[in-house]
Image 1 (cartoon, rainbow, N blue to C red):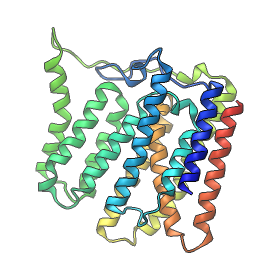
Image 2 (cartoon, rainbow, N blue to C red):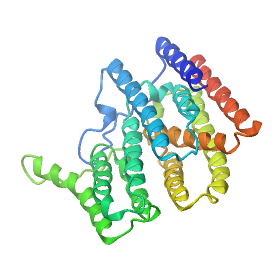
Image 3 (cartoon, rainbow, N blue to C red):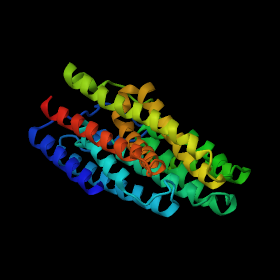
Length: 316
């Protein structure tokens, strides 16, 4: 099933690229200090597209590894990764460009993995907590959306039973270090952070394309809400470790969904991580209901919906 979904996703993206689908790219400098990822490949659409696709494949590998290493879904099925690829193919506006959202997804997955490996071991995990916050802080220099997840991982310290003065200091040093390096390596006068520019990249799209984009993201938000709410009931019956690991993933999912709604003009940056989170929730739902038809039917329905949305993007 995972291979089939991946093949369908690849076919949809190939057709979208052949037809020259519109790509949502912001022209604003969205970082606190350095050029934001949406500006890195200006005038080089092919390089932007292939870079993003390679990073999506890296995200897929990270999802498989995290689940295999920490067994957060209580299943070794990789169908949820195939669903993630299909969800990305349904949004060629984002997948065939480079907004940096794939970097955000990789950064958050790295932080989740580092936090999982430090569960209930605050002393051993200080370096890993430092690295997580340093990655997010460094990312915020390029795109302010990274900063949204710094409070999430601070709460995550409590979920990992690692909220101590030592770990808070590690987090604080992780946040400060990239800023310190930027200040030290910038020549001339003492640099000051800038206010990120805000624009609406969707103004370049027609009404039809906007409706399609909003509908696709709306379907993902609705699916995440329903699946996540259902899964939480089951997660409460897990042991403390299982609740903590899934709790962090759920928190990331909730904040990502809220960011997509509140910071709508930057949704192209958040949507890759949103797809990651919802794919995990779908995989968890599938495992919970694996002994009944509900799990199989739900995954099949989601596959049909996102395939239909992908086809819709081709005829727009």
